[in-house]
Image (cartoon, rainbow, N blue to C red; front, side, top):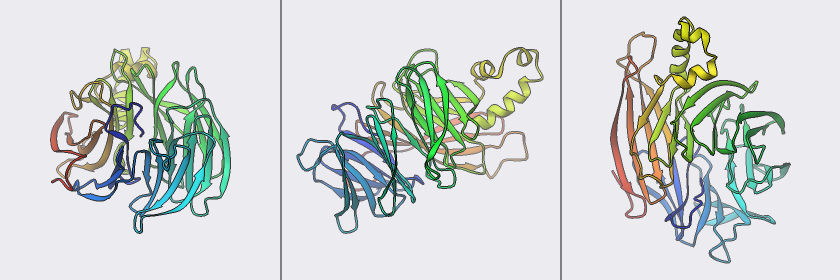
Length: 365
């Protein structure tokens, strides 16, 4: 995630594909941290970077300069080896690179009006996608090659999403998700679900990728807000959990798994029988949890559900109690980590586990 404002000390921030590490780019260089300990693993101070992406926990980085130094052009992507500090490959483009995504098989480079698909091992170009203007680099990419999809804006005037099959190199579908333009999009780790938010920022919608059908609609709030990030939880054994951070300073957690239970309950009620599912989901808040004032209002943030575990004390109830670890990077230079505990009655509690300054020191507890 790249910062859009030059006032932030952090220009970009991203977690690797399994959330075990994260990296920030600043005007001085970039820093890689261990997500579990907060320890600084690697630092390179050579100038400003607008994009730094990791490939799992390997030594390979995809980096793009912010253009503040002649040697760090925003039109040049460098595949960089942190072990020996050398560039393995450079790719030059006619316009600025606005986003980069990669997994073990594919490298995706997003420009303002084109997207290039490369073989990650040979760096041979496989396909080129012409896109609508995308200056913010809005995109999503699933790390799993079995469900390897790429999501891009398909309209500049409404929230339509192009879903592209990166493994088989063809367009999969288009999803009309919102009436206003897209602001954020994320794919679940397996590529099964896609979540979207529009520039209005009041509704989060989740679609099933396989047939482009709408599965859930969640209301974040009544008033418009800029959605900075969306993140699915990594667990495959538990119901999916979705996090959203916004300009309001709150972090919202939505659980499609709980929504299924609530929907089945409502279907037996008079109100549930009268209202369609899309309206029904918006009205029900039982699967919507909010951490108020998690970050300063208006400061760009990036929230990731890093872990989801089943509570070992849970019984065979209708709802599985779980604990989630939510990590938040604020672009004013801080890292926060919260533990969210949800019991079998769907009652939630939050606790701040860690907080430290990303721009100072070598490690944190």
